[in-house]
Length: 118
Image (cartoon, rainbow, N blue to C red; front, top):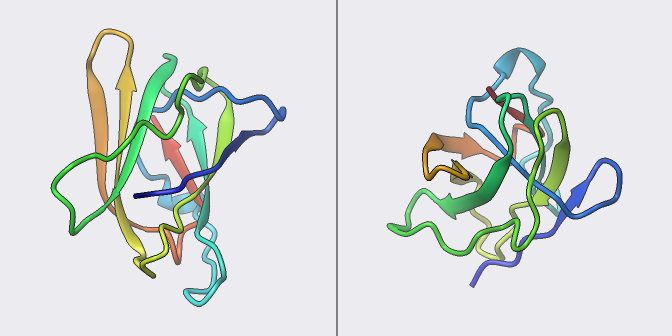
């Protein structure tokens, strides 16, 4: 089971995301860091209703990290991808209200601290 914690920049629990990695603003972090926190920014123009992150070695999306929250366009959320396995590579999926989604595969959360979904 994965344990994710998400905190919005304003302190509220709301998340909406679109998936694209903006490597020009990626901030490397140590692979031996105690956590795997990644700031997810929604720059899609739409609200993200569900967000999933799963190790690349799994075949399912696990649970919706946002739970009952959403991520509005323009907002960011801090997600800790430390699932206790030591894994660094995760697939990320942002899902919108109409059921469409954006998948960003194989994000190394040990070396990237920011991901922007566009």
